[in-house]
Length: 551
Image (tube, rainbow, N blue to C red):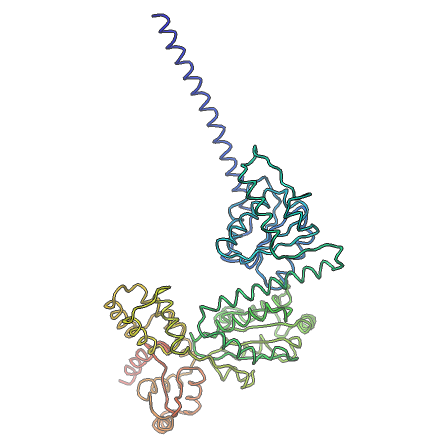
């Protein structure tokens, strides 16, 4: 009996000891884990804020090249407006921050700078493995740069690139993955810099940046595939710019709201800026809207000068640009876009005289008012942006109404009816297409179609109302009469009918045409643009107001 009691006590003691050991080791693990998490969190706070996308991610060994080659490369990339992610922090431990991995995933191109101690950094090797994973999963472009190191040493992991098998610190699979990553990267087409080649480092950096620009241009071309019918328009604008001619050239892009002026200007801007023909560039978006703010136009001019001169300290508060700043502008070949200009003052303040900018500079101005553009730009240098052709319009509408799916025959016929009504206006096609996307049956389509014809979609209404609001009272009245009573009439007949009602009728009709609110057919008949392209309900609202006033 005593022996049984002793055995039970012994078992209880063993269980207690094991429980104490379990609690002790668990507390150690928990403490280690929490400190690791807090360490990563602390590291993450130092990371630059993430953007949606980057052009380039730089992977490099900080101790080797941070203050030399990588610094020079980063500066030249930024000078070319190439959006580059660089992590300037010193390495702390082996843990790589999650935000850094996300930055890799969001980059179009990864520049991997192999230097003498790159392979000795666990941090760098983790970056490399993740970069090659992105290359495999979504086609990220990887460009290896072998800086003062033989590519064969990276490929074979020789010399300073040798990896040790340390299974106690990491698994054999992890080591194998890193070996494979080094070998794969070393076999890629890239750049090799050595002082023995006779090239200066500055020339080498320029060569790398030019290659990045070329690859980004190809990416941009593929991005245009969703912009139906834009390629031929880009080529026409570029021919008007006379890019190889000396002197300053200014081109106007004219069209109604929603026709795609900004999209077209943006595509030309990025294509030319990445061509390396210009030393500086600036795209001033939403000039009309921003100029309406307090001191808005002066701030727009400051933004323009700061971006062109790459000088954030510029602050001009005088009507004219100071001579020392003007001299710097005249030495900087620039590509400039002024988007959505609607007043002569905008052109005077932002563009000024022909001698404000360096010879060879190019300026594009988008506006809804052709007459405004003609005050600064030669008539033959103004490009009229027209709507999409029927097939292109149908493609764009389908892409927003059905996504990647192909519509059935019934829906195709119905789609053509919608597209014919919209008349090729890209904004209206996109918004209208998206409004049909939730419709699951033909019946729902019919209901939605009746609804949008009766009450225009707010986004379209808001954008296109701007053109109408820019008219003076006399022009508004002329527009309402034509829209309500004279659509389809010969221009001469309309002028004869309304001549006694308005002063300067002919000039008023010309202004409505210049502002893309009405158009003239080949047989000289006046046409009010469709509801989706003219602000639709404006006519109804103003007609009611006029009736109330006349009663």
